[in-house]
Picture 1 (cartoon, rainbow, N blue to C red):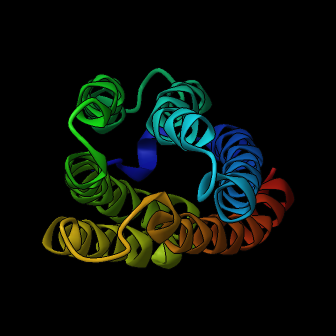
Picture 2 (picture 1 turned 180 degrees about the vertical axis):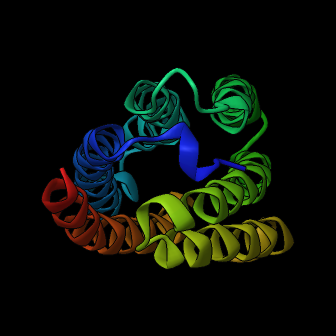
Length: 193
């Protein structure tokens, strides 16, 4: 757990600013991804394939920025684990796509469970330092539940990439909530400087 002496006010403000920018960027990506899925992926298999692969690959990039946002003194093990899981998921999605959409949704669901758990852990770790993390905690728990639903329903009728659009939009909602909540942390730490 991050102790309060690992951050000074300047580090806390800078980390909060970096995380806020990242959360806005993650929300924008998720919204654009969901819109593309809804608008184009249902009738275009090639486009759906690319979108299936891009989502976990983007998580690797976003996790890299999350790692960079934190001072060297902070334990980044959850982020490194998340990056490895997302890299493996990207390759898993590529392989699963060769076997069909149900297998791909199962891989996606397993990824949602694992990364949701990591998001939950990070939200719990960051709540004392930055505040406003309840939305990330809820989002992590919801991601775990959604992943279970994806796996359970993967072989059901009408399952495809469009069933994942809502997942991305909920993620965007929670990233936006957390980004806006971080304004309070940034203001409080800036005043204490």
